[in-house]
Length: 74
Image (tube, rainbow, N blue to C red):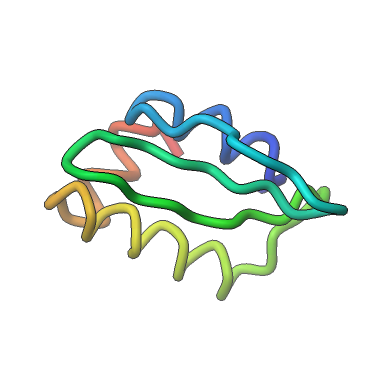
């Protein structure tokens, strides 16, 4: 999955790109309190990195990883 595709999917939870430096995008949401994540803008995010990002988002939103994946349609 690309960073751009992930950023687009996370818009469902209010994540918006707040900055970009080089190949890294900073995404931020105010939903459920402020949360920031950094995502690479590469064609393919490494699977371990993608897993960590999704777990972090799920934890912040108080949903299971499975629920998050279902909502994001991934």
